[in-house]
Image (cartoon, rainbow, N blue to C red; front, top):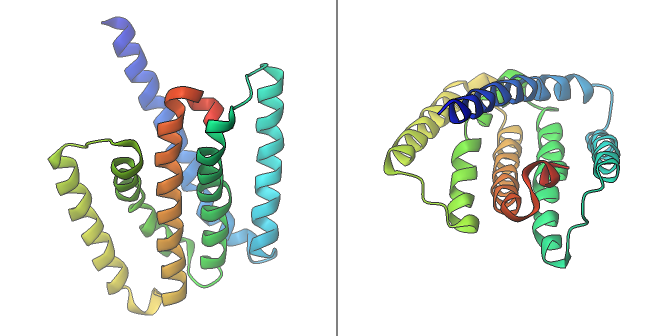
Length: 185
């Protein structure tokens, strides 16, 4: 029981740290696109993190992914490493980071939908009730902002949420065989 409680507590702590770090991503991107091209910014971010991840994998002598992992890794990379950062960087040229953060609340629903499609996951009905209700409230809020809204920026954020949800779901599926942190790398 203590081991389970310890793992649960550690999971909550890690989750909180991840959310805290992720919450600064869009405001930082908004500031960066003031001075840098979104494509350059995305490539630079991916290169820096990719080199760090590769170094970690080599240092810890992790096994190389086999051929069956290549397509899932490509889907994950295109959604999470390229798609989400690139689309949000372009969106943040036309919308505020505060406005863009509203869209992040749609990410769990996007991930769950792709989890059902790609990973045969089956969330409970109550999850769907709250996810859909929350998503409708988010859309109503975004639409009510009127003067803050920008159709191009909003559509780019929706596209970013879709590709990121696909990447996350594919990553969750692949982590069952490749390992969680290895898939993240």
